[in-house]
Image (cartoon, rainbow, N blue to C red):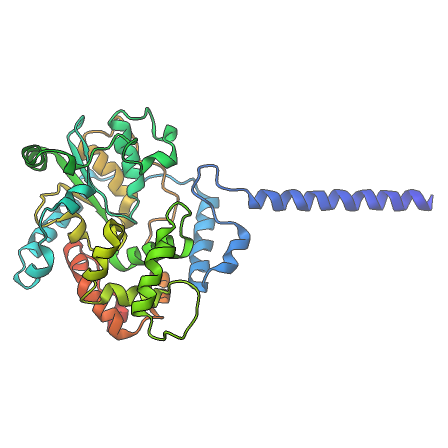
Length: 356
C-alpha cells in the first residue's frame, strides 16, 4: 500500500513538471506575424529604460490586437498634413537656414526615390522609419507580387528582383515629368531616435548579411573618434558614433563609406525636401493614422493595406533617447545637433531637453 502511494505521488509530480515545461515553451514561442515579440529572458540584456518600454509593449500585445487606426476625422487629418507642408515651406524659405535646408537633386537623392508608374507614385526612402513596409506596398501595386504576405523578405531590398525602379534609372526629361506630376511622399522620425535605431541595427545587432558595418566601418570610426585609444572595449560605442556624426569634417569618411551612410544622414541629404514638392510627409510616431491617409491620397487604398503595426512600435521613446545620450558629452551633443537641427526644424520636432 505504501508503494502505491509513493507511485501516485511520483506520477503527480511528473504531471506537474510537464505542465510547467509546457507553459515555459509557450512563453518562448515567437511572434506568428514575424514581428519578433521579445522573449521573457531577453529583458535582462536591455538597459532599465528599455526594459520599461518592452514591458509596456508586451502588456499592449496582450490587451489588444495590433492594428492600424482608422481615419475617424478626415478633415482633422487633412489639417495636420497641410500644417506639416506649410511648416516645411516656411522653413525652406527661412534665410537663417538656407545653408542647411537646400540640397541638389543629385543622383544620390534620385537613387533614394522609388517609382510606381502604374499609379504615378514616388516614394523617397528614409532608412530606420519603416520604409521596408512601404517598399512592400509599392511592390504589390507595381504588380511584382499579388500580396504583401507573399513577398519573401530577402527580395524586398534586392533591387534586381523587387520590381521597384529608382528614379535615377530614367532619362532627365522623364525624371522632370515624374517629379512634376506624380504623387510624392516620404516618412520622417525624431532625428535622434532614428540615429539610435541606426546604431543599434548596424553596429550592435549587425545583421549577418551586412558584415561590413562591423568589420569595415566600425574600426575606422573607432580609430579616428575614440578618445581613449588604450580603451579596449569591444565594438563601436555610441559615443564614438556621435563624435563621428557631429564632426564638421565628417564628409571625408562619408565618401569612404559610400551609400552605407543613408542610415544616418539628414533627411535633406536623402530626399531634398526643399527642392522636391512632396505631397505628404508621414511621421513615424503617427504612422497608424498616416499610413491610411497616404494610401488614400495616393489612390491605392482599395488595392493594398499597410502591414499591421504592433502597438507601441512607433511611439517616441523619450527614456531610451535620454539613456543613450547620457553617455555623450554636452559638447558632442551640441555639435551633433548643429548638423541635424535642420531635420528638427523642417519637420516640427522639438529640440531635446538635454541640449540645455
